[in-house]
Length: 126
Image 1 (tube, rainbow, N blue to C red):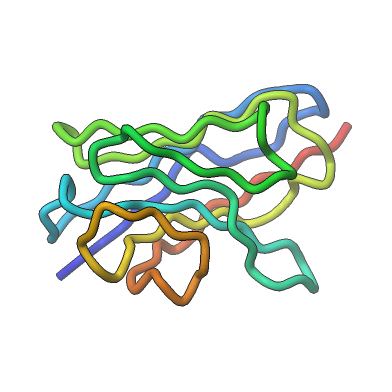
Image 2: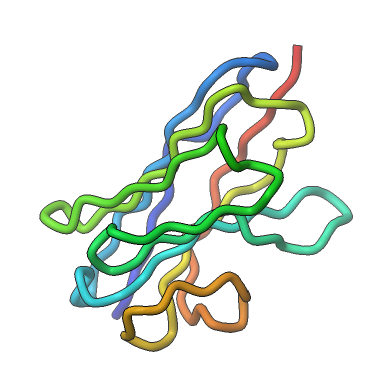
C-alpha cells in the first residue's frame, strides 16, 4: 500500500526558510513523478511544484518560482521542498502527492495525482 508521510512544517517568520520532506513507501518511487500542493483556510488546494521521476525536470507555480526548490533522492524514496524567503501568504497545509500514471511527464493538475500524504502545516508569521 502506498504511503506518503510529510514532515518539516512549522512556524517561521517572514523571510525565513523551511525544508519539507515526504517519505514514500509501497511503490517503486523512482518511476513516478511527484508533486507538492498546498491548501490555505477557505481556499482550494493549489499546485506548488512537481518533479519528474529522474529529478531532471521540475515545474513551479508562478507564486513560488525563485523561492522554492523541489528535489528528490530516489535512493531514500524521499521528495523535498526547500522553501526560502517565505511570505505570510505561503501559510497553508502542504501535501505531497504521487502522480497517477508512471510516465516521463510532470503535471500540475491535482486530478493527475492519486495518492496524497496527510499534510504538514506551514505558518509564516511574525
